[in-house]
Length: 207
Image (cartoon, rainbow, N blue to C red):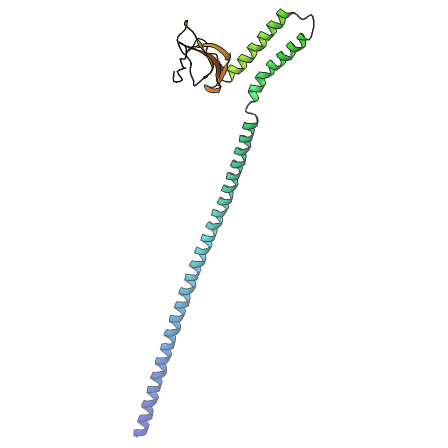
């Protein structure tokens, strides 16, 4: 009797153990399934983030390429404009000098005639000179002819000194060669003769 009860008890215990093992296995499988599902979800989010970052990187790269192309075009255009500016900087000035050139050629041809009228040649020369002066002034070129003015070392170059009692010392008494300014900037100083008060007196270079 006792052996029968023990056997029954052992059988019941074995059933309980098997049931517990089955429940544990089910719970483990459920937990593993949840982890696998979470892992798949995380991978999907990472993939989406990666694709988004890749798309933005491609967009930024394309913008960089376009910007570089625009900068290169601007650089080439500026270089071309600068070259043209250097090449044609005196275009208008040259156009204004063409009239002077034409007038000089006409005067030279007229002078070849042995019976040329000197008065007319002089008038033609005066007209040509006026055309030249007007063209120069139009482009900012002015003469420096300082006769009767005080000597100015910034614009005048003394060629000689003369003793003069009729003018103040350091006065320009004669212009050997006129000077020129370009928009108030000195192109060539005027070559002049300067007065002094007495024998041995020096020019006041600071006047």
